[in-house]
Amino acid sequence: MAIVQFARFKSDKPEEMIKTARQAKAIFEKHGAEFLRLSRFHTGLWAGEFLVTTRYASWEAYGKVRYSHGQGRGIVAGARALAGL
Image 1 (cartoon, one colour):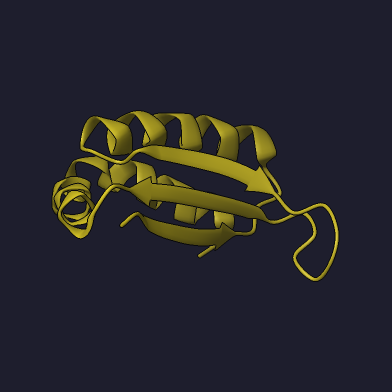
Image 2: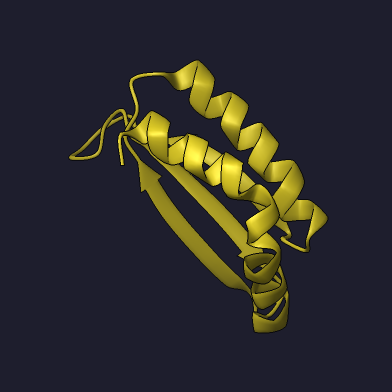
């Protein structure tokens, strides 16, 4: 059973969000995520915000990525800073 995780970010620096997402993608996929995708809302309540989607093959794969997430702490911190969180 696939596990899918969604995270929504606000940022007024799209180029930096794309750069950070590329770095995060490499780290997350290295540790077992099937994919990491960055999308942007174009309409509605969240227009202009970013959506990060990650998918894992199983809870075991999800746990492995979350456990090794510490290696990507700088990436996550950078994304949060860009998003003003």
